[in-house]
Length: 349
Length: 238
Image 1 (tube, rainbow over the protein chains, first blue to last red):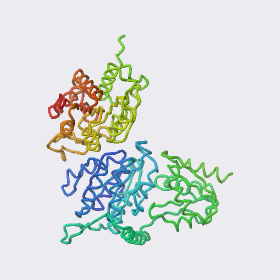
Image 2 (cartoon, chains in turn orange, yellow; image 1 turned 30 degrees about the vertical axis):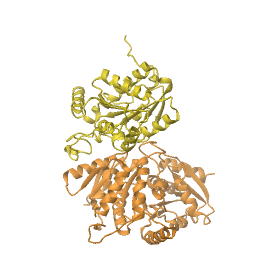
Image 3 (cartoon, rainbow over the protein chains, first blue to last red; image 1 turned 90 degrees about the vertical axis):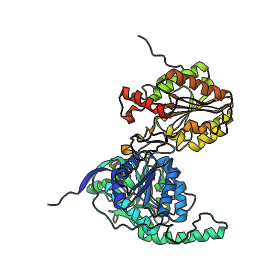
Image 4 (cartoon, rainbow over the protein chains, first blue to last red; image 1 turned 120 degrees about the vertical axis):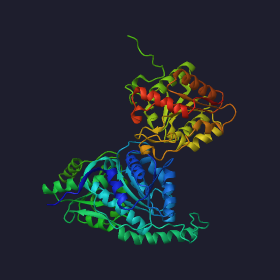
């Protein structure tokens, strides 16, 4: 008899389990809905296990800087935040990009701008990809359900330590708060963390350059490394796109709804497919172009007014004559039915 | 039937209350409303709020009200006051907003002696997000992020005492408790009079949070009194 390893967990609990499985041992953070339970959950773990370090800091910027300090000291440090806290976290993240540190952060997107709503949106995509005052030298994973949340959170730590770029797991409050049955028993090999300092060699780390050419040289080095790493990191899912007349482009939670919608529409005999990026940065442009190559219609479904749609248009520019249709619901959920209705409307026109 | 005396400045449309049963904010806001009525300053008063439970007061008064970001109310009302010097600007924030994320703004606003009134509510926790520890969490206090009292600091965070160290002559810094409403009201009035005289004022109020403290009515009053043993009530600087 096959045993069921699944446990009923919230997304925030899944993230904690994945971080522990990935060898995380240091957490610095600040409360913000919808990710507070990760902070308090870690506090409860750290109260029992003295190998786990916990600091509740005075704000998000300080939290991110403490993570950087711990990374330099050799800890597998990470943090979580959301919404307006994600804005403040761009300051340490920018430093981590410059120093190329394995900074791992889960973000539970909430409605914006400003305090907005506390649970859901897909409005932090641009911030996650390009929020710093630089060139977006970070990896962004976008889980679409609880199982992927577990898998990609572990992978985030692995990627960060393997390639030494900051990594964001870009979820949302629905993913964070929803209870689902999920198997959290699988683990991947953990890369051991080494200190940047205290290893007998003096390292003088800087983030400030005096002349343009000097910074350009540093950037060009980072671009080469990022491009090389990207080839191994990039992930996407193309579902029933081979003969699809209409391809839905969706990511994260909406990507999951879109997959269910596509499966149902196929049963009705409609030639519909889905392209779903799993890494939002780097972006799987080749797969996206291939998925859209036969389509007469591209339907972008997202809970923002075009953060993702702009990436799709830019990627497909010059490669596709398909009509571009928007299903944009900024900071509102998009259901399976919403997508099915829109597809039916387009194909029956 | 006796009608409760609701201050004129309170927006009747704000009912039913947004706050939890037993929350100290109802007492604080109603009392502040009485002070605004009595001082007849409503037409020129601008009310600023922060992040935390205080943000629920965004439509509590018939006053121009600005809801700001976490820790930023002090700077926002400072900007308004500098641009509209005849205005009365009152900022309301929690202990996290003032003493954690907003501490540098609070200290520098006090140090510059900006003519604003800041009211800080100390309930020893972050209430809005479900009761995590705050700078004001006392030693061994159990909160959502201090399980079994772990990770608490021996020394309490004395915000007003810290601020009192950087203010100019004429500034006013004090601490009140929702357990003593007449005293709180008198200190609120003085905090606003200080602004009218051109100086900075901070009034901290030790307040109730039965929801996150998980206390009944009697225990709530008792815990507030216990907090006041650490956070000494009265005028700290005038």
